[in-house]
Length: 191
Image: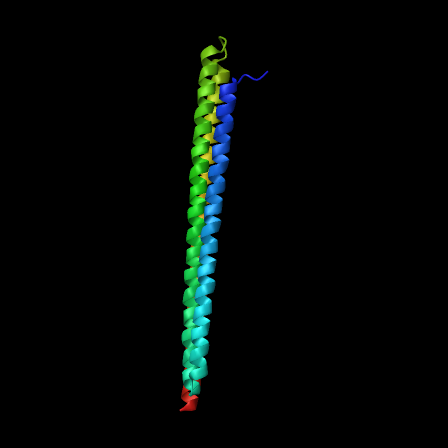
């Protein structure tokens, strides 16, 4: 037989359902933001491509065409960086919501486990103080280890994202510089 009363079992199931629902809502909220961002990027790209094509068809001088290409390349680079930052922000905020919810759940389970051990200690037979102390030490150590691991993983993820952002920024700057360097010799040759 279960030691849980039907009310306790129902309450536990309700908590699990609410937790899963919260995680799913957070997950789908992040997906929804990414879909909106992608739709916005596609619309913006189509509009910009139409404008660039119209300008390219009306250009009479090759130098103007190369200048148009350089400005388009810089624009694409800037938009790619912006897109990457937006994706990072969405993923980061969603991950932060997951982490906060997981941390709250962990703390709740920790408190409940502590309460269980305290009740057990209260009604434990004489001479079991050592076993109860060992359980309390184990629970505290497990909690501290989990918290330390969580913080280390969070910091490692943050550092990896910062490195990726700086690499994208450096690559786009180098691309823009190469484009400008390619336009200058062509412009000088045509003069």
